[in-house]
Image (cartoon, rainbow, N blue to C red):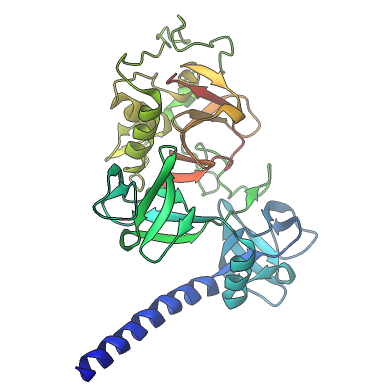
Length: 356
């Protein structure tokens, strides 16, 4: 009996050490900005070099190379150099995060997870979420984590989620490093373009189209009216759209594609997502921006569409699906495929509500 207890104790210590070692190793490869306002990310390791991005206090990046005075990092879509005087890494970063980063995310790690009404496996199932779905943590206990699900308190079993700090990343600076992917139209390789099929279409939004049932058409004569089935609850539909879309994160980007598994471009992705629920959207992003009605940023809800334009242009070239908490899911480009991003990875041009 003593041997069994000793073995269990030793195994427990080994597992605990392994988890702590993993966390330590992770922070050894990252930096966090320790500044009052923002930290400049520069194209070269000198204060006279162009600023390609900015990191707010608490924003993080992954280390590429370390020098005596500068560290080369990648943070979000920004790659460049930051001064060693204003960053923390390793144990210092971990301690800084504990003291300064308040928000945590819970990410589902199993294929399908029940969302419970109470902290019990026998409590009511409020819904099911898929692998990769993220929630903002409200409270965290030994076995259960409290989150918000469909505007109510809910609980996730800790064995099937991973919880980590919700770190921000650098914001790109316009007209800076050409290697930075600003929109769906530009890959991270200089001189190559990854064009959404919307590039072959006329662009612009119709700000007079303020109703889901307005009678209008795009430049190709297609009907831009969106018809929602009568028996659909808008709030439930929004949640279902988001949950369904997140299932395809990690799948490839394919120019002109509409397959959620084999590959889609940005407009093909959202068209196929909405099509699953009987909602017909136009094919290309510029024409999808005529569907539904325009809403302001403070009115945005999960399930709304966010449109972006190419750098230095007013032509709509990309569309994403808003999933809440300032994030979008979209088919970004060939290098990143279908992924989740901050909604401000590029400046939103217009937001459309095609549901209610």
